[in-house]
Length: 290
Length: 273
Image (cartoon, helix red, strand yellow):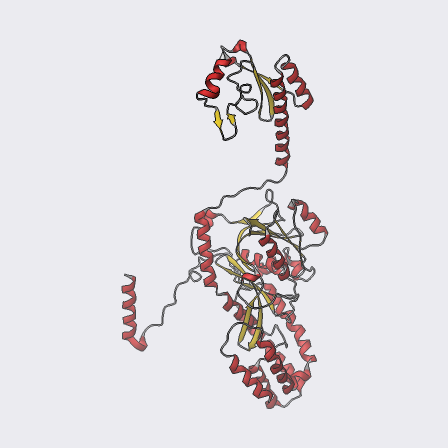
């Protein structure tokens, strides 16, 4: 009576394993050979049926015969297939000898597909696998908010400007910038007072600046890494050599001051930060040059 | 009730006039920071000795020149690619190579053979870069960061040009603890030791409450006490996730520091960098 079974389940009444989609019917039964809901593929509606299923990487051939239809517990007979592909195909053949062609063919096809996907699994596990770490919304939000607050608290622009000005004061840039007006005045005063040769005055300047530097460094409790101190010391030693070379430039004030107004208009194009004092300083340098 | 207390205090101050006590310093998170025993004293000898003998010593003794390899995770999207390019212009002597499924463990010996000193891997998620792995190559520490708020150059509001080829200066701010110090040195070792002051470019790593902000500016001294800065170059923020002793190895590496959320995020005033 498999025909009766199919009449009932197949197209008319309800089959709990059947899934219908727009174009096709699928069968969810785990012993189904093809996965489709057909007269020849339904394990319930065929008294002689066989499937291939795999467990933990090993493939088994399951068979169902009419004789055992009354004993549901012994209904499905299981045969372990060998790991060797060709041998396993032979085993299928010898177990399903005299069985309908359809079932034999489909069994072998299914077995082939299964072995292929097992091989892929084994290959993929050897490669690196991407580990998905779930995002936690609450934590993410918390981090984002904290970052924003830290950004506000950091006041980066001010910090950077302060740092750069400090480095300028500590003479890490050497003689590239000709500003230090206060230092100039001090040097002038020292020159007038002592009336010594230029080189001596410069040496004293250097000494004085060194002293300032040393004081500064010791009092410096800011949290910079050591490399910066080393950098400053090394660059300062280089600059002293440069300063001794550039005797003339320091001596002739007019030349050095003549430089700044030339650079002035070229420099003005660069910065985008609006500073109110710009106009104040420019005229003073121009008057000095004049 | 806070308002009431404030009003009362203000009235008292007005009433006292000149004899009023000085204004109280407002409490900030930085002021209230839980004291960390690993904060480095600049005169600490032990720390200085450690730093003279750790993995960055050859760099700080000017024996090695930094050479950096920047790469991404698989299949980088446009934004990440552009970010990598910009990063390579910011860091001198850096090269960008794309990864097509190459395992990091196999790239590392090749990099060492070709004399690279540092490796940066930018991890990507949903078309934006979100992670950074920085490893110092000849057997150096590996730091894994989470990267957030990445802004490419064209998204930054400015009217300037691109960074030139000059070597930038480096500013490292606020790296106080031992851990912070080692991370700071890691960043410092990316850049060549002698900056070219003609270039007037500066790269800043500013640590604030365990977030490291990276900025790249061009500065100009307008006068002795005034400097103008113009931001060019990308910007991003990093948060340290873990620090490993050896080179990148996710399974067998020994971790010097991992951010454990349960233990370390309990207090709002406790920071580790």
